[in-house]
Length: 357
Image (cartoon, rainbow, N blue to C red; front, side, top):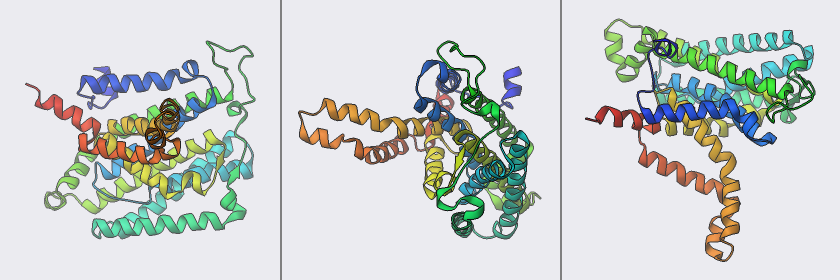
């Protein structure tokens, strides 16, 4: 009963999916104790940030049926909000709060204006408008070097509790050093968990049901008396606010932000791939998609290096497995996953349960 309430009645509904989600949660919780080195911790932190970011995009695309290319713009606003505030106000919690608040207000206003003026047009035109706005914002962020640091970006200090030099105790605990990075990571995990459960609550509320009705048949929803433009605009604003919070988390974790870090169009492509791999309109798909994609993106190159060394006696195979070709193999894996799971991994697992006798 408690679990059903916690997950807003939207349980995984598949044993395999439940096991997969539990493994991901256990992996994220135990990363500092199980894996040494900065890379594994950075990958785990990035997975948390992208779970929030991809879930917020799924709220827009998977549940409302709106294609937007401005999602990275709101992600960047969150990251720049915290970066600029900490750079100019100093490394205090007050500066963090001010940066997050200003970023949320700016994102809310921009998403509201874009939604009210653009969501009345056809989906393709809306996508083009958001692409144009995101490109303009990227250019603006690169040129306002006095405020944003331009192409070089901003490096800044975070509050003392989150700094790597801060330490709770000198000796390691179960192999992990209890320093500021350790605290930052678990703060990130906790915020990610809360934000994900809030989004799960939204999509399973009466408001979320209306969004799904609009996605399935906009004219029918309009005929039933729902003001679809208002619902779509609210969905756009909520999605932008969650993306902004994901950007704030990114800035706090990296202690740096620049145009390529949070506003790049490549990030938008990655978000789309994660949603498709995990499964649109499922929320849990965001967790699975973000985790698998980021693990492949960060470790496929290392795996291919091992394969290339093992196949050193076969020139053709060695060249095929060269680490530089990791993008090619990532593309092939993506095509295979779409072919094998056209409704995403979560969609396929749930469909298998529904079709079981």
